[in-house]
Image (cartoon, rainbow, N blue to C red; front, side, top):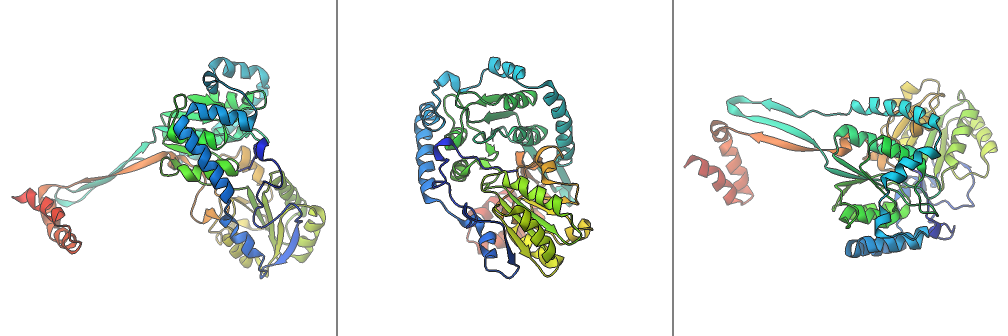
Length: 435
C-alpha cells in the first residue's frame, strides 16, 4: 500500500506529474492486448522529473551543510509550522498524551494485527550457518541486524498509521538496535496521535516531527538532533522517493516507490461487484494505477459502465494465459486473481509485489491486517524487488577458514588465476605461508 501524498506546497494539479502517461482527464477505457497503449503501462517507471531532482538535491545539500537549521527552515516553508531545535523531537509527554486522543478499541484491534504481522515475518528469520570441508576447511555465513534504521511515515493527505507497524515490526524481529521514526507535522505542529501510540507500543526509540526530502536528508547524513541511520524505509511522495534515490549509497533504502497499483485478473465467472469495489478502493489513492485484465467482453463492459470516470484500463485478452503474461509484464504492486481456480493461474505469475487469491482476499486485507508488509515494489520493479521483510534489516558476512594443509591443496589453481590477472602480490601472499 504505497500511497502517494503531496505536501500542501505542491498540491496544485499543474505541479503534480502525470503517472503512466495518464492525466486527470483520462477515464477507464477498454483496450486490446495488442494495443500500443500497453507500452505506457509497461514503461511507467521511466518517467523522470528533472525539476524534482534539482529541488530535492538543493534541499538535501542544505540539510547536509546546515543540519537542524535547514530542517526548521523547510518545515516552516512546506508544512507552515514554526519549530525550534528542541521541538523537532517529539517528547515523551506528548506521546503519553496521545493515548487520550484515541479510542481504547484501537489498541485492542492493533494487538490482533501485530500478532498477524509477527506470525508472518517470523518465518523470514535467518540463522548463521557453517559447513565443514576436508582438511580443516570451514565456510559459512553470519547474519547480523542493522544497527540503526529510519522509518518514514507519510501524513500529507492522510496519516498512514498502518505503515508504522508494517515497517517497524519486521525491523524489530530482525533485531535492529535503534529505530528512528520521522513524520511531517500537521498545521498545528503535531503528529497524528494514532501514529504516536503505535510507535510507542512498538517501542520505537525516537520520533521526530519532520518530513519531506529534508527528513530523508536528515536520516541519511544526521544532524545535531536527528541521528544518522544505516537504512531508510517507508513510502512517501515524489519528493521523498527522489530523496531516497539521491541518498542511496550513503545509506541503504528499501526501494524507490511510486503511486500504488492494482491489477485484477478475472473472467466470466468472476463477480463484477467485487472487481468494481476493489478498483474503486484503488481510486481512493491519488494517481494510483487500476487495471482489469479479462478475456470476457461482457465483464469488461459491465465493469466499465460502473467505473466510468476513473483513471485506469480494462485490457481484453484471448485467454487467461495471455492475461498472466500481460500481468507479468506490468509487474504490479498488487495483483488480484479472481478466477474460479486462482491457484492454477498462480503458477503462471512471476512478477507481483503481493498476490491476492480468490474473491474473499481483497487488497485491503494486505493493506491492514493479513500480516505481510504492505510496503511493496511499484512501477514494474516487482520484476526484481520484493516486499519489505525481515531480511531487509539483516546483513550477512561470509566466513572463510582454511588450515595450512587445505591452503596448500588449493594453492596451484589460486596462483594460476591470480597470475592471469597480473596480481603477483596476491600470489606472494599465499607463498609467504610456506616459506
